[in-house]
Image: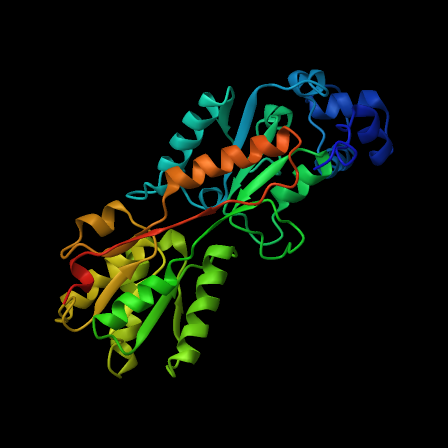
Length: 340
């Protein structure tokens, strides 16, 4: 983003003008002081949210200076019940590596929940730039930061923003997964994707369906909420068992927890893994490593992605607007669930 595109931060005057009230009313509303009618308070808050205004003193005082801190927003975790989903170490590995890389480059890193929500920490809007991990479709965080002129890069694309190019891509190892299970004898492969509206789900399904067409196979796609964990995998297995026809030769679950739950339920029903059905996870996790047999998984290389994202963001902060977006190569870890 060029300096000519970077907008000034909104002021209390802007909020007052947008809400049609006085500066005092804005101050009282945002600081929970004074007597302001409920409808007026809501109108002021809506105006402040739309403009991206923060009343925080630090944010107001740093409009033209750098704080020396980058922000990290992990979008898949914003929709989960916990920022520490059991057994899922990808995001913690990513955050740790990003923090260390930022320190090595002279910056701090701050983990931030969705800054476009009213309860977000106000200091977040004073940060120098943001990394957005796995943005959702038409992501409101990207919209907010663009309005503020805050530099940002994403890990994964926003599927509804084709014009947004500052994102780190991965190699989408679904091709390696499908080739591997075919080499092990699979003729029919099912895909279990999540329900989050992000590139991870959309792109993997698109590539899988293209492969199915080229392989003269009917696409078999199940969708299950990421929050359902292993229970969601068991539910998919139940659907397969109740279908009445033969099971697929292999099942590719994009989340490790779904893969572990599905494998365990199929085994309980008497099916042998990998002899009768193979299971692969699109993201390695504690559950995939500790299953019996251990589940073949894609290592998404979170440390490499984090380092690439920090470097990419700092290049943008330093005015390098033409450097290419990085691509991180994933790694397929072959384990017992597909070894025949």
